[in-house]
Structures are given as structure tokens and as C-alpha cells.
Length: 401
Image (tube, rainbow, N blue to C red; front, side, top):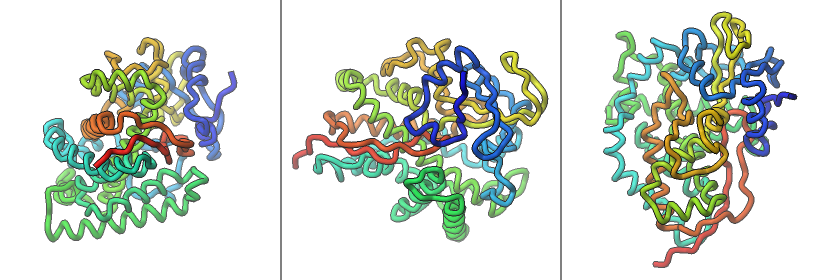
């Protein structure tokens, strides 16, 4: 079979190529693609669930350090020192510990009442209009407000995070018109803002992650400013980009599967399992890369030291050996051990927060806007990395006063 070049954003112009991956899982579950659009030597495509888990759980053999995307950036193009997603144990655990206390299940449960307040305010602004752009007016607002509070960013500045994130993540999308130079400029602007925030927190620490990062130590040393900047960028982007896209995809799935939405309206207790099915069905992060640190084998394929392996989560989440009827959107699916949040030591730090935000958002959406439907073209992000939604016009019966 002819292989698609998964490094090319155009490959995903019509959505994730599930049929291609279905054939890969059946015929070539570990497949070598010669070359990439960046001029690199090529990469392995890992498409099956158990293989994605195996590679993810063996960081000594398959490392995150050389980079987490297909492209190898020259040193002068790197945005700063590596963040946690570019580290292996034991360094990864030491850095993760700096902020992990803010993301424990107990800490996240305490946020639920306030999350309900935020969602009510978001929907209050749109419910009487009868229509809106779901992405910018609804899906983006909740994670933006929450991550701004986590970081100690004033709410008046939260949309700066939104625009910086779009320029950084959307550099492959012609509609955004963002070049690599613009992406770097966005990173510099974010770093400058983070440094100003850090200076304010040094004078007056608060109960936020910026203060925790500034006061924490790794191996007895405080973070240097470039390390702090990389941390801030990771938390700001991961905290709003992925949850925004999952909420958008989740609403789109309910529009496309009206029987599933009607079942949730009748059986709201199914919402937690519906959230897991949204995550399985449309994982916002499509892949991460690992690099082989020595010669090895995977499903009989000879992997050479230095080879890149790309781990495709949407494919793993449709693996027929793990998920019965994997292409069906089943809001009552149990069990549902999807890999949308990754696996191993890089399992998403904010998974509990994301689940809370998504569940609370749909609790209110289903009750207040039960007849919400599409009202125009849905536009998707032009990217080989993030399964993103740029715009989704919707209409609904306006709430009365």
C-alpha cells in the first residue's frame, strides 16, 4: 500500500485519515515512511494500541529528548530549553513535581463549583442570541479563563494567551498566515509577558502556578528564566488548546450523532462516559514522536538507533483488537481505556482538569441549548499535529428573559 506522508499538513485537510490507518493496522502496523516534508530521512508510523503503549513506557529505549515532533529544529530555531514533554526520567519527574500538586484529583474537585460559575457566565452571554461561533464564543472561553486563573494571568489578558497559542500552533495553516518567524515572534511575546508576570510574583507571591514555579527547586536549584519561560509556554498552550478543541469536537459529534445526544438528555448520568468517548473519538493531539536510542525491533521491523517513531493516538483509539466496533460513537462505552491523554510518565498532567471542564460544559450545554445545531461550514486547523477546530457556526432556540 502507498503510504501517506503524515508530516504534511495537507494530508489532514479533510480530517484524520482513519481508512488509511485502518489498513495500516491490518497490513503494516509498524511502517517506515521514507523522507518527510522537512527534508528529514523519514520516520516509523506506529498505529496499534499495544505498540503505542510499549514505546511510550520504555523511555530508555525510545526517548523524548531529541524532539517530540517529526521535524528536527536547528538549535537556533528552538524556542528555549526543553519543557517537560521533551524530557525523560528522572529529569521529567523532578520538573513535573514543581506543579503537579495543583492538578491532583482533590485539588481539581475543589474547582468544580467555580467551574460551574464560569460556564454559566459564558452561556449567559450567548444563550439569548440564538447563534454564535461555538469555538471562540463557547469552547475557547472556559479553558482560557481556567488556565489564566491557574497561572495568575489577569482575566483581561486571557485572550493574549489565545492569540499567542493560535500563532504558535497554527503556523502550518495558511488561513492564519503565520510563518515560522511569526511563531517565534509569538513565543518571544509570550516569554516577555511571562517575565513581567514573574517579576510581579517575586514581589508578591500568590496561590498560582507562576509563584509555585518561581519558588520551587529542582536538584536544589531554582529555575533559570529560560526554563521558567518554557514551563509557562507549555502550561498556557496545553491548558487551553487541547481542551478547547475537545469541547468543539464533542459538540460537533453530538450534532452528527443526534441519537447519542438524545440519550444523554434522557440519561445525564452517562455524561462522564460520553466525555471519555469524545476523547477516544477525536483526540486533540494526533501524535508524539520518540527516538530510538539503540537498535531494536518492533513487530519484526528492525528499528535502528536514531530512527524516529511517531505514535498515532487516534489510530490506537480505533484499534479493533482493543475497542469493539471502534468506529461507532458510543456514549455508554465501557471499558474505554483510550490513549487521548498519552501513556507512561508523559500522561497528561492536566487530565483531571480537562475532564472536569468538558463534563461541566456539557452539563450546561445539554440543559440550556438542547437543540443546538450547525449553521454553516466547520473549519478545521491545517496541521499535522493538532486535530483542531477553527470555526463552528451554530444556531439554537434563544433563551427568553
